[in-house]
Image (cartoon, rainbow, N blue to C red; front, side, top):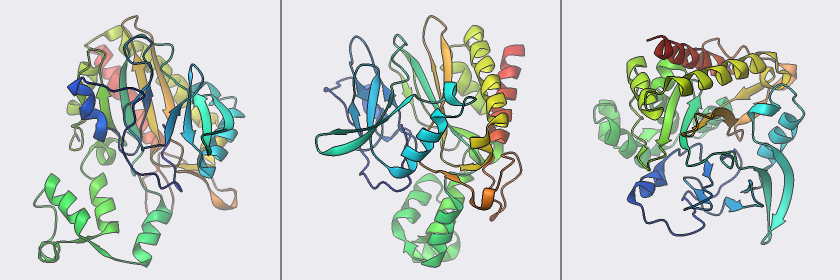
Length: 319
């Protein structure tokens, strides 16, 4: 559920038992930066949709275990003491040891749902910390793998020099990647959707326009206006909590996601997940979270993205 800043686990999904449905296989690459976990009471007792091999284990009923990382641990500990944000994050139950490894134990957010539909939205205008960009510039190295990823998405993206080198620098790739989706245009992007009927979609890397996002959301809720209203209420409550939270105002929140979950009963909730790149600002600094990011100001655009998301859902309900 959380992408650790300092962890180095290899990427690959884990399932507690074999899954034959082809649609599930599509989720192996889903939510690369922000894996999430699904529990099903019937057919699939515990399945991790996407994440890191060995990073997750099943905990006691209603809980999951994620391999310990100090950065995550500190954030979760602090969030449990934040009275405003506590209802909007996974419950955290400290560190446990299992099979010779340490894990963070937290709530499985889907345990109260019956065959839920799930959507992961990556929030903010960038998915990398400023320190990551700085480190990449300190030791510039041409990356052929990143060049290949770039041309796979857009063959015209590299410059003539990059084409000749068949490689790009990491900072160039990091910044280019964020321009592809609504991360740049709206301050959030849809990472992946898995619906209750088993259908999956992860093809949102080049979804930039508001109208395209609206179509994806409409399909996600099957045009159910009541579910949209319930999501809207939850998002507005969360936004108010964020604006008043000392934790949020004093942290750079990068690579964090909102997890949307609903089922046929029209129960619909949203939680903040992925705090592995959430770092405390130095020298008692604070962020606005709406001011445009300029390298050095550490602004993440989280609230700007939430404002846009709330406005889009409000417009959908009105229409």
